[in-house]
Length: 120
Image (cartoon, rainbow, N blue to C red):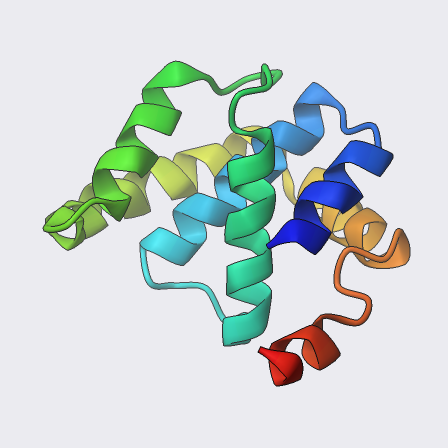
């Protein structure tokens, strides 16, 4: 999604934000995410736009696991992804994740995406 890449370019994200995006991607992959399909696509695009940046707590190991889980046959990793996601959420804390989600909404990450989807 070009709009997500443009949003990332215009908004300086912290290493903690990268960790939050990584954690959300784990939640999407473990099947426990309650977001709409559009929001999942946006968050996956956000993760893809920041995964090369350094996180504060998470790094190459989780990115490699996410890449493996997204590959064909990766659904076999779902239980392992779940364990890693729970650990990541515990590491980050609820207030950090809530602040990240509030920031991306307030800063307009999702603005106009319903219209963009309708045009596709």
